[in-house]
Length: 302
Image 1 (cartoon, one colour):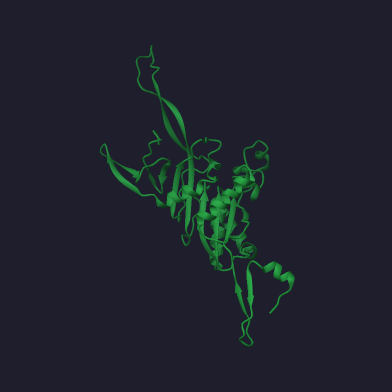
Image 2 (image 1 turned 120 degrees about the horizontal axis):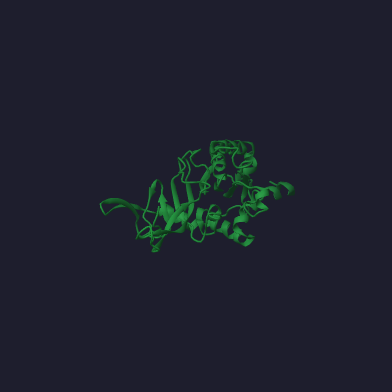
């Protein structure tokens, strides 16, 4: 059995047509390939002119944080290795999860928008997938939008292999259904602040001060665990600060951090008559796991 060259070119990577010898029957075997979907957060052309925001959605959004194409390619390569599937479609599918100006939509509004978008564009989104899995990576405002898209895809019978939500915005304003693996991760940074060790008198105030390391969570998103995620982690993003911490989760190393998040064991321990929570095997970067603040030797003030 033959098909036209045009059809063959269009379907080569997703459809195999065989002609069994059985009389009067033709079998179609759909050979799908897993797909990555990247859902960006808020972007703004004006703020981009001051280097304060991505200026465009989709690929340009992600490449803004990843600096150049080579780093972006490594990010995608690491994502594919992390999800553990094989024979992915070469290019990710991009969806724009941005609000208009950052305050005009709630998290649930964007989830509804993502759901409607997926329902209206289901053929384009799932092209070439067949019976394979779809994997989501979202950032900031894009997390709620990705939750809506995933809900629609599952309702239509497609499989969501996993969703990763980086620096999810307004995590207290939407939920995920819990019928697919979903992991949420948020960054914070350390800032040294000086604290007075002793006080002599009003006339001769003490100059003895000791810097203490205070943890600051990403102020754009705050500390909000999304209902329905499998696990939520807040970690220290070293060498970042107030201006850069929000985008620091879009990093080639983030998938190693996510792997560790999945494996963490939090154990209670008595210290000076109080119960504190520790990470088994030591803790360098973690501030919080799910709803539990954990002891970290790099943090003096929580």
